[in-house]
Length: 589
Image (cartoon, rainbow, N blue to C red; front, top):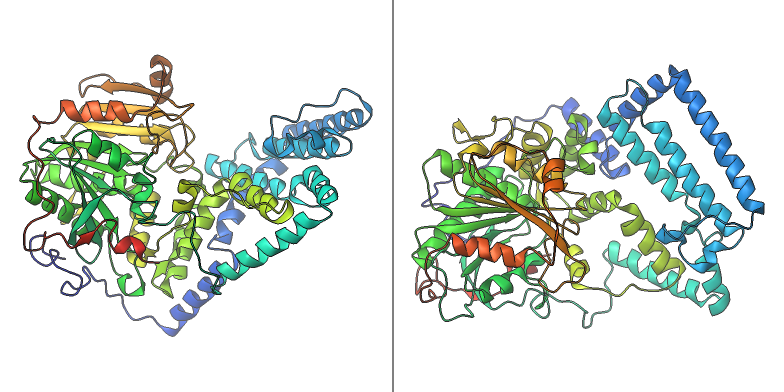
């Protein structure tokens, strides 16, 4: 292990990669097994076949001995066929506009409307077929419903040029030029994916140009992070700085996107000194970095630096997504060890319990984690493309089929925007850390169940004594708000919970003035009785607008009187300002 006060506080040139793990030499037989699993992983894009086989066997065997369910499905199939036949000759056509794929006027005409209705009926029928089968375990039921839904969506008439009403109309109107452009777009994307050089030139969004442009300095660097301190914009600031720990799965600037929707800029403008962790993009040589290294080199080193620079006794810690999970590990360890340097802790779309961790949880079992480990073994990391593919699968209609239709069949390139540019700027996951994250936190749920150990002792979220501010988003597919809400179950401190409109990213990047936003907010005292998520939601009235202003108010009440802003880093030593923000680690590809 690294020494917190010595080894970790140094430049990458002088600090060795931390906590190494030496495994026993593999036998020939084990090497053959790992090689075979690696090839299976490549062929299935990292999805373990046994996960689907187990779910299918559970569903199929129970359906086979459920004659009532079979009769119900046959009855439903006959009704659908009858309704479809009637719709073919009936002037009262079904309303398809609720489904964006079939909302245009071209889809309301025969035979396209019938094809669209048939697809919708098929999707609904398969949902009925894979759910409410007596005896099927809930995880297998959910997985079967999800997978069959994806398969039916793949066969949607909107996905094919010969059955898509909009594509046919565009092809006739443009004399096929849409398909010509589509082929060009497809060839460009294939070349980009295969690593072939593309024509260079100005890009619509570039880091340091119109993304991640908040003024600041890199004031600390180690093997894993650069710490950015942002320049003050007010004459005085709160003494307690804000330290933001973003997820390492993507680049940090999700919280410093464009100038109009930067959470960093907003907090700075409200009189706070803000520090941001910028993660290194790991390579094969970082394969042995562990979760403990991420806690020490990432969170603890950043806390030490921020407090040393500002001379403050405490700070406000903010964690987003996986960064929030990591912050919970660090905060719980600090609470266990009597370290009271946290004034508050805030968790944005972050989970500490993973039993209901969204649709990705459907695929996580021991077989799947083993396959991912074998897939990482060759290169020492999980690539950003593999992670991006997993997340795209959760919303295939919007992130796979929709863009494919637009780019390749309609021949239109979608207009880029800042959040999309950030989403395409992925990072790699070190082999050991990612394995520990999947096994300890997700598969075994060690943190929530009191088995996660730091050093030689277990930690518990209940040891976090600082007040908590937690944000869940209504349409989150990665960290469902009901899962984020479980912080109420594990904490022994005051919890202010926000439920905001939007998804995992857009709900957090929710600047004041953003149209159509709403949120709910309420504080639960440590001594108050528990309310389940549905009861909480029913009791708290929604407010128009966004939650950022309430967050600032919450932080301000828990901060000291304003003082003169601190210097930008130290004048010398390891906290001396090194370069301008956004730094160098964020530029790593």
